[in-house]
Amino acid sequence: ETLKAFEVSRKALQLDYIDLYLIHWPCPLYDKYIDTWKALEKLYKEGLVRAIGVSNFMPEWIERIKNECEILPMVNQMECHLFYQQRDVLEYCRANGIQMEAYSPMAHGKINDSFVVQSIAKKYGKTCSQIAIRFLYQEKICFIPRSTKESRILEYMDSFDFCLEEEDMKILRSLSTAKGRIGEDPYVFNELKNLKEQ
Image (cartoon, rainbow, N blue to C red; front, side, top):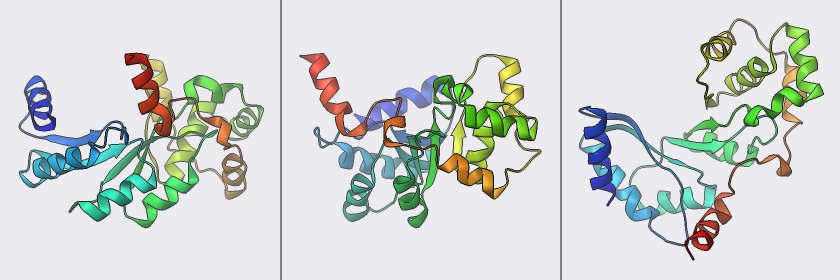
């Protein structure tokens, strides 16, 4: 199924190869992610994909890949923003040479409501979004800020001409809490999907 789905995507994109191909959700109750990962390994070995990775994978699921497969994920795409930094996953990825990639880096716009982020933004003459991007950049976390507005995209691009001081980095690190998640929890995503199907 994975190989067929890949070929459909590749043909739709009209490409000879794809730069990065990910498993979007682990859904461990289905127990298919190991077989799926082995299919991604095959695509990687054949040169059809330049890099393979996972999304929403906690360390224990990557450990299983490490023990049962040949290639470690090169990327782990996770919800990651100032209010939910997943430091444990980040440290695991760093220790295993896996690039952490943040989705929802603006926390669905909630960073603009934070007095702390506003204060730091004012100090540097930047916007809250630029502070959020710069924080991830300095933490060496890739990020995917989504926007359809040209002005917003240009604002994001203007986040690389300054550097956050370590004191401010510490303050921003302290904003992360277990309740900061805004997206689905990988541990219950599978169960929620099952409930919706019933």
